[in-house]
Image 1 (cartoon, one colour):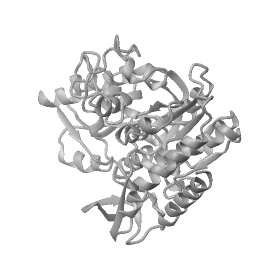
Image 2 (cartoon, each protein chain N blue to C red):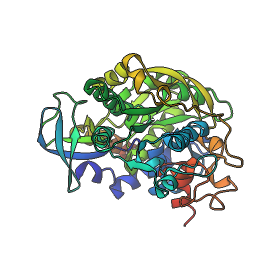
Image 3 (cartoon, rainbow over the protein chains, first blue to last red):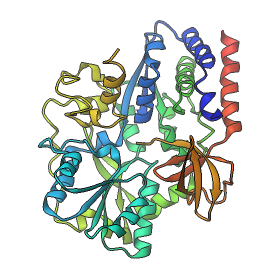
Image 4 (tube, each protein chain N blue to C red):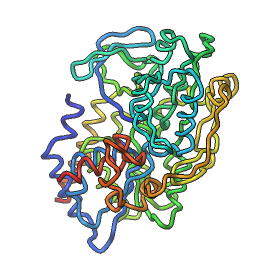
Length: 363
Length: 74
C-alpha cells in the first residue's frame, strides 16, 4: 500500500540519514526520547539506532501500557481469578505478564481458568452473551485505547447488562510527560511524541514540552517517519526554536479526534494513578464516573490492589523512566526472556526489553 | 498496544464498516469518525475501531517537505 511503501523507501531513508549526519553538531549530545512502545519496536526492528550519528541517543520512554501497570494491580487480576467464578477477557498483550508469584494469565488458562483473548473491547459484549459466568475485561491502554473502552462501557450501560465488569487500568500521557520533562537525571532534548495517542488528543498536549525549551515532534511509525522526526528534533535543538511539529498529518489532526475525546470525557474522569517504576502521578489515570462507576470491578468483587513493591532484581522501573538501557540489566537474556519474562518490559511485544532482546541480542 | 493499522473501506453501514487490511476483511466500528469516511477511503484501525481517516495527500506533502529540505542541505 502506497501509504506504507513510500515511508519505507530506501532512497528516502538514505537521504534523510545523510541529512541527519550533516546537521548534527558533533560537539553536542542529542538525547531523544521515543515515548511510545510502538516507536520503540519500530526503532529496534528497522535498526534505526545503528544508522544514527553516535552522539544522537535514543531513549525509550514509558509508553508501553502493559509495562507501566504496577505489580499490585497485576496481582489483583490473579486474586479475582483465584476467588471468583469469572471469565477474564483480555488483549493478548497481557497474557504473559507475571504476578508476584510468577503466575500468568496463560498459566491460569492452561490450568482451566476461563481466560479469553479479544481483539476489540466490543467483542466483550458478544463474549458475555456466550458465557454463563460474569465477564471481566482488563481495560488497559492510553488515550488511543481509552475511547474504545469507553464505547464498551456505554454499550454495557445502554443495554443494561449487569454481568460485565472492567479493571480500570487506563492511563493518560500529559502528566507523565511533564514529569519526564522536569527530571534532571534524564535531561531529554526532544520527544518523538506518540503518534496514535496524538490521533485522539491532537497536538495541544505537547505544548508544555516546547514551553520548557525541548522539541516535540509527532511522528508516524515507518522508518522514514521516525528518521524525519529525529531530523526535525535535531534541527529544533540546533536553532533553539521549539514548536510542536506534526509530521504525521496523514493521521493526526491538530485538534485530535473530537468524537473519541468526547467518549473518554463521557465515561471517565482523571484520577491519580500509579505507574511502575515511576510511582503515583497526579491525574494520570482514568476512573469510571457517574453511572459508569458500577462497571468498576473493584466495586463488585471483594478484591483490592496490594502494595506497589516491584519484583527484586527487575529493572523495568529504570527502563521505563529512560534511566538505563535494557542492555545493562543483569537479567537480560539471563533469567528474563520473552518466553519466560521476569518483568513486564520483556512481556509486551513493544516493551523496551523485548525489543532489545529480539533485535539486538541476536545480532 | 497503541498499534494502528491502515485498512481500506470496502462497504459501510451506519456505525460500522468492512475494511480490507492487506487482503483480510473485518468489520470495524466507525462511531468515532462520524460522517467523515466513505467506501474507498483508508482508515487507521485500532482495537476494532476506525480512529482516523488516512490522508494520502498529507502523506505526500510531509514527505515532499522533508525531502526538499534534505536536498537543500546535502
